[in-house]
Picture 1 (tube, rainbow, N blue to C red):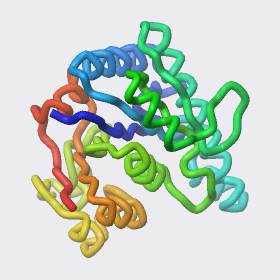
Picture 2: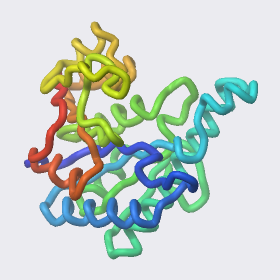
Picture 3: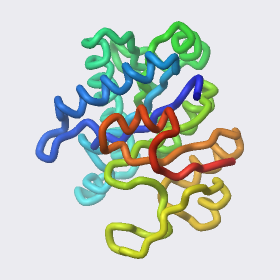
Picture 4: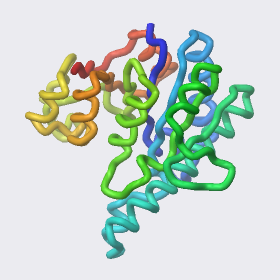
Length: 233
């Protein structure tokens, strides 16, 4: 059983098809986090901002990459606040920490983050690493290092691990049960960006890639009871 996890979520994990947020998905996610906390696991969460804005949209509009990245960071802060509010609503003490400054949000501080986790709070991290040209994957890897997480749990929507090709277009795509970060770097697999893979490898923090769809699949991932791909250092 893990003592401390970094849960990496996409913005789509809390969105509906035609709206940035889904009450049903937020409720389900919060209840799963409650169950994980009741298991005695300390939880840090990084959530993306793709339900609000995506870099590809900014590219189509002709905006600069730096502007797009800062907009994306702010999107992650909004999502972090939304998830934190839901957790607090059901009685789970949670705090948002951000790498970009926002009123009523704590600026990220490594020592404070570890203290709050030890006191039983759930931490939701927003703002990436606070700089452009860094993905949410990189932010997740960095926060996992900062809080000394045992593992990064990478919750995916609709895919149950890492494949050698796109399973949506190739019916013969092969799912890997186990990989190393060197495998990801050498094969240039798209499950995690290369900078994040290097950070995890060098810090000795493994990952587990799994499908978050399905009843209590995040809880099952913590217990090691669901299908996925283990990524070792």
